[in-house]
Length: 433
Ligand SMILES: *Cc1c(COP(=O)(O)O)cnc(C)c1O
Image 1: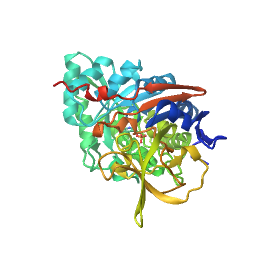
Image 2: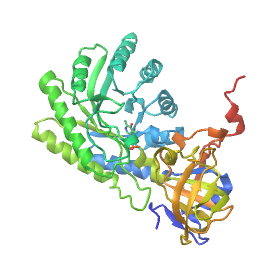
Image 3: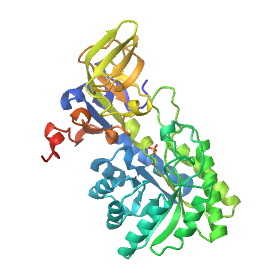
Image 4: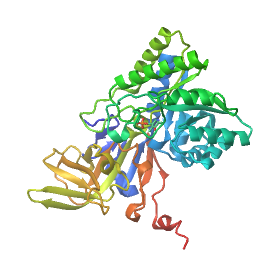
């Protein structure tokens, strides 16, 4: 009945996550609380890896996009499952390094990497840097020169593909702050220039067209454009690039109407296109890289809240306030993102009326969801919001000086705190005067 098969209802009519009772978890650890189903994350990693092995003879690598959820524990888990990782900041690189992640399997992204981040990346032995622009290319060449090393790079390219998704999570079109464009020759020029630099080794092309994409057509289109570009680099510059990195962005189920393809199908379809197009051009098969973030961790997460004040405003709406909000999940206030809420302590109750689930921050827009049909809710109930594993903890803040919730990972019968709940002392930790 719920959209992920690790969720169910037990004899007490409570929501269960794996074998665990959500209401018991809320009692034991307090709310708000992030729950993470580790078994599901592992399965999702394995599904991607197996699809690459099965459809592409393992001639590639699946990277977990760290920005979706970056902690020491999740980084270790991803490493154990044999995936690589993408990172977009010094903080993410540092976390991966501290988790013992094999840094040669890390791709470093970002549209404005600082000198000190580039230095850190070289220091830690990051495998590939995905260069965004010419300024950064020069800076990297300089830093690599100072260290007497050659750094393998890809460029981020805007393939000019419409990803059919929210404007804020669209990244493939020319009007984007990320990467270099194809249409105006910018991409071609930067490859030609990079080929002249001493401490740079060009190793591939990268694109990422957006996020929460359900349709496979934009991925096919991106693959076609990128392969054409690779062929052009070879014809005009005799530059043979090895890696084709098609980014991430595979959609997941937030609401009942969302209908994503299983991971393996995205890979299978993309591989088919890549094989066909490269064969047509007589090109060697590229080393293929994908970077899913959301589709690895989102469905594995559930956030538990306790219901506080309820305001029934006649002929207007009913507000149900919970003990978290935009500080632990800013996706509704950012994008109007859809979520499904479940009354965890009465999980099979029938919805009776629409409510707006409000957070506790001092912003009218601090909502979790508006006008959703819910059963009768009362003070003290436990509310579960599903599919919060991606871009919740990683986007969380201390707005209103609210301490961040803990993260509890579930693995079979086991449960453990992998990130502690912040304390008020943590909140003032860096206030030095
Ligand atoms: C955000 C991002 C991803 C991951 O996107 P998901 O939608 O979480 O799969 C991958 N690659 C790049 C470059 C990104 O910016």
